[in-house]
Image (cartoon, rainbow, N blue to C red; front, side):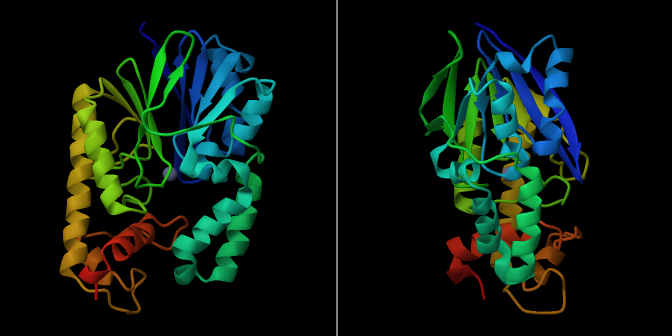
Length: 304
Ligand SMILES: [Zn+2]
């Protein structure tokens, strides 16, 4: 059975957030934005002739606030009848606002200063995460979900986060932030584990998606954004660009030793320069520093 997919866009700060309606016999929403953007989802559904009360599935691609922040509010709006699904290793981000603070401290606390980062993150998640609750279903790669006769395959796509999953239904593949090409608003792709990110890209490419949906308007090498809904050729291009970007960053990391300096990119100023990266790495969250840390943790012998 074929299904239709409708992107639902919401601007938030410098980010463009997206949810997607899967118009299956049992309606599903992929990702939820943050509290503020989720408030607009019921009206968007109405515009599509659908009601929030009729959403039976909330499928979360990963645990970042711009994907799960609105989940509690939207689950409430379904009368708590929707199943809320997330990869098991990212479930803590639905259960607890503090998990988001702890993650930021672990990934970037040394760079920003722990006290300041803790204060900023605590204030941010209070506003952006609509509530804390237990997801109704934790999934792993290989699991299958039934939207009333339409099967959704769950694919593990770790790297951006440990518990990231992609949902595949009728040739449509929802990748969340597992496919970033040359990055979104910050101009740099962000992933915690470079090796897992690369393997996940290969896994997604092997699926040969007829349609690929991205979590944000990620950019090509020339800086122009991809549409978030890609056809087969666009999907192939975005996946190839993502692999090329990762390879270029990996090569730059291997070629330049970490070196403390006054640069905002310190200790990776040489890496940023060799990649012609001129984005602002001080904005939170910082994909640049998250990714640099990923290489340092996974391949410590190749640095300094
Ligand atoms: Zn993310």
